[in-house]
Image (tube, rainbow, N blue to C red; front, side, top):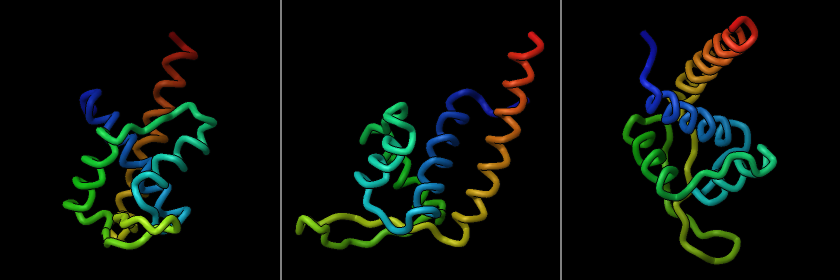
Length: 111
């Protein structure tokens, strides 16, 4: 049996965040959420109440690192970067997403 629905949703957020950091480089939380919103044509909006706990958890899992910096607007921001462990996790998450997507597509096609 697969992961419960809440784990799939959490895994999807992990996938999106890790992919954003892997493809765009170091970013602060608002930039991550904004990037995801932009690349999905405003379909996916990541709320602060979901993003920051996920970032904290991923930092604890050592998939990302963070350090304080100053933004272009002279504000103090926490900047996140993906780690080697995060890149490995990203590959696992992408594979898992592809399997899940393929299974749902089959179910819709043959249901």
